[in-house]
Length: 358
Image (cartoon, rainbow, N blue to C red; front, side, top):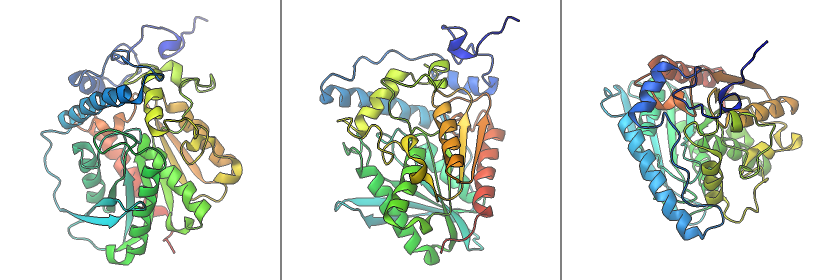
């Protein structure tokens, strides 16, 4: 039998444009923002001075800001959702902004999604068009949604490596929990995509370690970026090789990790990279959903983490959205609206199924 391996495992010249698994509707969206083929090799390496790395990241961040703006422009407004802003004190004397979205005709208490946005923990902002739309659409489904503007490891919001962003996410969650009656919420689910999924999971690990795990009813992690050791990855994580170059490559991922932990001292610290959590550290965590994208280099680290949760006795459901690239189910609302809305509805059903926070 003449079997061909998927992706770059079977054809080193394969791209998202030529991979037969790619959803053709999503491919149209990828092409519109020039993400259907691999980008240029990063002009910097891990061993150059941090000043050069920060300059490189600024360009990457601005590129993805423009991508997100383009993908979410021209959409009809979300009706019947109210948004307000709350500013709270952070753990280091910093200010944390919380964006609170809820249905106009709220008949609560309702489940709350505490959203930690993507960007590898080092770039982008909760004010980005894609994240604002995501929170509005979640709220329109019948939930209270709180987006947290945590400190990034680098980029436009300043250089604040681990654990600054994690500490901000924890502080924001504590405020939401302590104000749950005023917010009219029944339970809190942590949810994020990519680096935001990392922060959702690591905040849960921090909550267990510090004794306030009761604040979290569940975790919905999408395309989690949780491994950390991207400069010398394990061959067990086949998707890093199979899908290398699909939206980003191993070199780019390793560079992002450098901004989050410049010294590399936390490369296997579960608070920074939850993939490395032990059975004991995972035991007792609330129910999880791990949502993966078939054509994502990060796919398999999420799948391995799901198995670790099961081995630790944690309720976990793992789903793979076929034909989609990293965060494709979230980014391409214009092109695959059925997939986008199915994920919104799945998050709602998961949150609605859980018990109330005590």
